[in-house]
Length: 94
Image 1 (cartoon, rainbow, N blue to C red):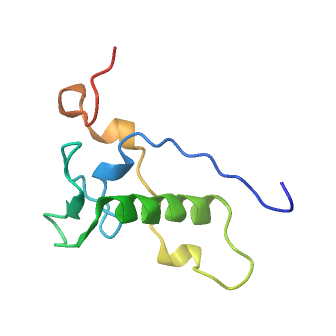
Image 2 (image 1 turned 180 degrees about the horizontal axis):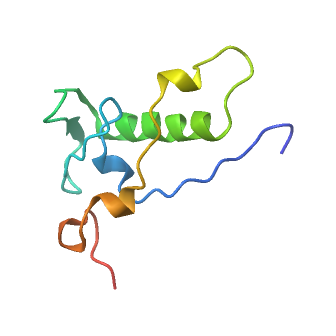
């Protein structure tokens, strides 16, 4: 891919996790704003998800250009294990 690496992450629950403190923040599908009850971060839901995806990519393949260091980033938890089946976000499993 033209000298670029592709990192694939499991997108399940990515909109429910806070990009700053990694707390679980339940949302309905129509909620467009991420408002963390722990760190009080308020940000667009899609921007919050994009920052988490970027963080996953950096942790998987750290930049060699002096960008963010791994010491600055806490690893993302495995989201499917964070929530019980009764509290799952999104559509029910069929």
